[in-house]
Length: 111
Image (cartoon, rainbow, N blue to C red; front, side, top):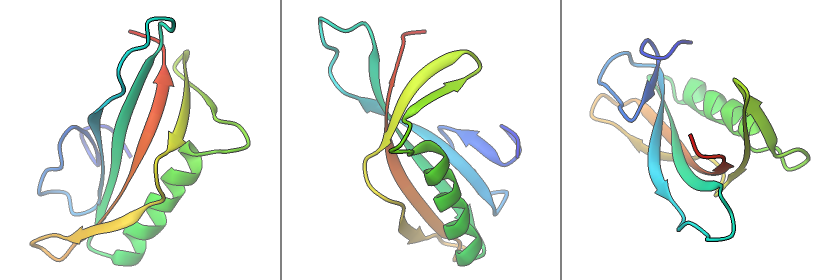
């Protein structure tokens, strides 16, 4: 998997059939006493196969929402992530592909 090939940021193109899309969905109001950002993102998985899409969204969910250790570090950027709900089937699109989603709250430092 690679960004621009089958992982997309703020886009869900018609092709490829199987993809992961991450959408910035805003966040929470800033708090004067904390310099951190409280963002929200939506993780979307689409596939021609319902079973493949469902399995992939749950793999991503388990990777990012870890109640036993919410601290994540990626490329020296530290964050805390918490799912806002479990994955669910959003729709079957016009091409009958399964689209699963979940939303994630992320606390991280400013860029």
